[in-house]
Image (cartoon, rainbow, N blue to C red; front, side, top):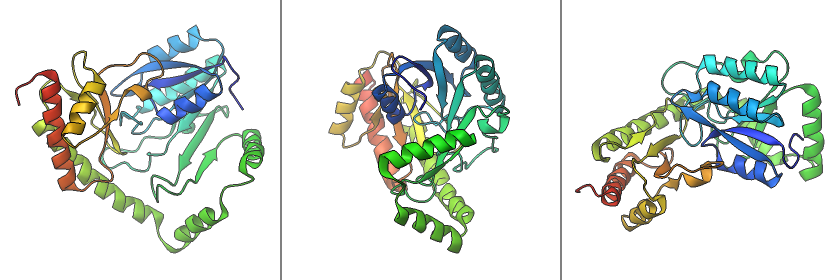
Length: 288
């Protein structure tokens, strides 16, 4: 609906690998914008927009971003809308993890600052109810929704009726907010266990994000580390991670990878991080 071959899509660097695959499949020119601990840098975004006048939209995951776990600050969210307004481009706000905040204060979505129907807000039940439920929702301008409906109908007529009825029945009979609070408590404890293990077993100099929610921790090993070599070493120690390379739209930063604390027991997390720490030390030449 937005992208023709050669059009520019601006994304965070790194960002969700499946989104990159979709944009590439339509022939988009993808421009990555640097992040820091507070999300996408607005000075870098302004430059990217100025350098790419054919930009169609900005794609962002502002809450507990995949893969970094970082969250964009409120002032940057408002600034992003200002930049998009000036350049007359859209913003696609992908927010699958926003409800899973287990520390800190809630931040209004980017859509909150939207005065010109410029922000397309996306979310899903897959992270708050069950990952097999491929069902979500869109908040956007009415004409855009109509076009989405036509495209959906041409693709598969409609979303699976059974899945929709399952979700509707759950929400009729149970308190979904109570359910979300339960999973937040579980994820918070597992995140704490993983962070403590990282502090204990990783060598000095390794950087990692400190998420206040979501599912992910992003790790950066110092030096010009071959991520494949590190991954192979980890496999020998019976542990694995998701390499950083697929998350980058352009130049890859070596030695980066994503960890996920959502589906392992606390004992498994401790054991896995201890093994990972040993593998990192072996790869960078630190005495184990």
